[in-house]
Image (cartoon, rainbow, N blue to C red; front, side):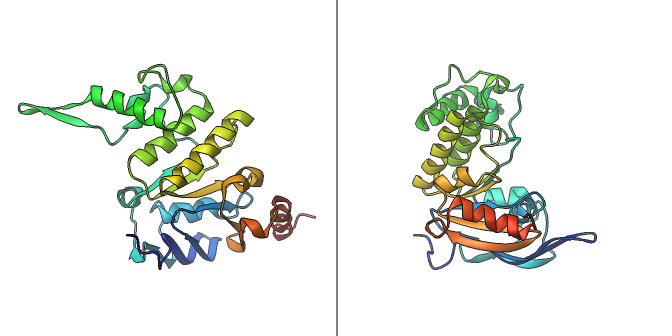
Length: 252
């Protein structure tokens, strides 16, 4: 059983400077088990910096990070990934000219031994990729389909399904609904809810309060490197959230 006395992830007093720019000014942030947290704020609010510190891409100047109640220090994204934190960035980390199955297992190829030789198990990877995607409601024509010919929603589904398949505890999504159609956005939001149903917590980073509001349990607002608000969804409306961010940014 998980230690539910502590959050799944907790960041305490995170500070980060880039030269003279103070990107984060002592931010506290946490994610519970089976929770979807919306991380909101305008450009320059500090959202990306906070997440890059969480996954080990940047090191904090001050502050502590805890995973399942234990203090951790990630020196690279590989460290956080090894402990179950998966990040899907806007570019999705998918290679357009590679087939679906190669993208699905990118960096985690399944191998088999034949005598003294080791080979990539193409058959198993092709079959697994199709079956996993079918489980999240996506039926593709072939595992050899090139990613370049997939829609934005299908690409997001592949990235989310990949994280679920490889046992993520925390899934971080950076603007997952950007540039998607209404229908594709609805499907991606369904995939996010399915991830929670499978026991995975989610950080949903976005500018679009209406998208995250549909699925989030809690909303955290950043502006100019500071946390300016934290609310259960039941405590605020999307319009109230926008008013808080606009006021903090000095927008009349």
